[in-house]
Image 1 (cartoon, rainbow, N blue to C red):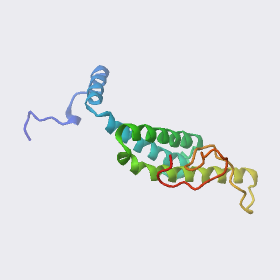
Image 2 (cartoon, rainbow, N blue to C red):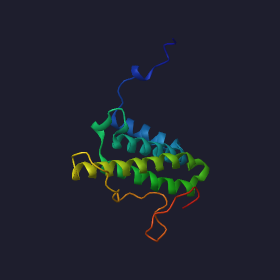
Image 3 (cartoon, one colour):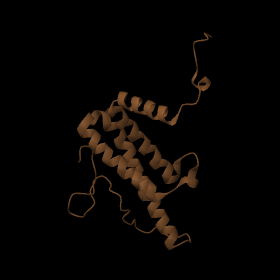
Image 4 (cartoon, rainbow, N blue to C red):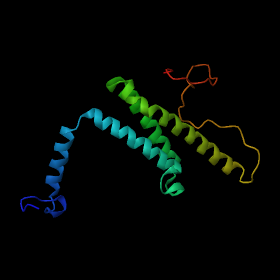
Length: 150
């Protein structure tokens, strides 16, 4: 190894100001498109963890936080489709739909458990409050969502 070569772990600790400058430099060099797609992936992962499907399971389950992550992902998908195109965003559509379904199932299960701790017949699903594809046709009636629906 050349003596002039240094490794990050061999460097002196940076000052807070130097760290801020380095972060600002990296942000300035990163295309916003890349950061947007990375952020969408992070919110998808975060929603799964907050639904209790992460490595720590139910210990990290927090349904209000899961809902916020899901709704944020949904909003980011809308922005990304307009700015970077539907083809770049398509891989996030299916995970979003799955997260929405899992959230609704978790809310329904929590409501059933709170209402009737004894096992019994399943109660009809209550409105989870989270937007799901295919529910905004104005009629108030549920309808089947198909790809291409807005």
